[in-house]
Length: 223
Image (tube, rainbow, N blue to C red):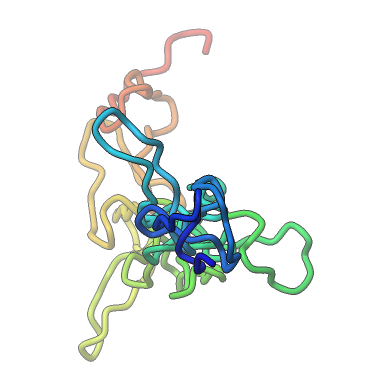
C-alpha cells in the first residue's frame, strides 16, 4: 500500500509533487489526491514546469493548497503562514474589533492611526501622544514621532526636551516641529493660538490657496 506521500496507479507507487502529500490518506490512486503541505500553495503546471507547491510568502497565507490575501490593511509577518488567524495589522494601522467584545484573532478591521496617536508594539492599541505634543501625520508607530503641537515650542530643561507655549509674536506650527517662527510679511500677525500667521484686521490673504505664499492686501470698499 502506498504511504502518505505517494499515490498508486496500476500497482506502481508514485511520489506526490514536491512539498505535497496525501494528507495522511493511504492507498491514494491518483495524483489529484495530493495536496500541498501546511504553509504551501499549488502552482499550476506550465510547458516547462510541472505542478508544484510553493512556500507561502509574506504578506499572504495559504490554506487548502490556495494562496490568499489578508483583509485590507493586514498581512502576515511569518513565512509559510497557514491561516487567516496569522493576519496582522500592517504598520501604521491598529486593531479594531467591530464586535466590541473580547479581542478576537485576527482583528476584524484595521484602521489608520490618526494624527496625535501612535500604536503599541503589537499594533493592538492606540496610544495618545503626551500633553502638548502631536504627530506630523497619520500612521505613526512610535512615541519618537510625537512633536510639539501647534502653539508650542521645543526647549531643553535639565537635559530633557519639553514643549512650552509660544508667547507674544512667536509662531509655532506643527510643521516647524518645535522650532519658533516669526510673522514678518506685510500686515501679518500671529493668531491667538500662536500656531499660524494671519492678516491684520482690515486685510485679507490674496494668496490663500497657495500654501506658504500668504500676501495680505487691504480689504476693498464694500467688504
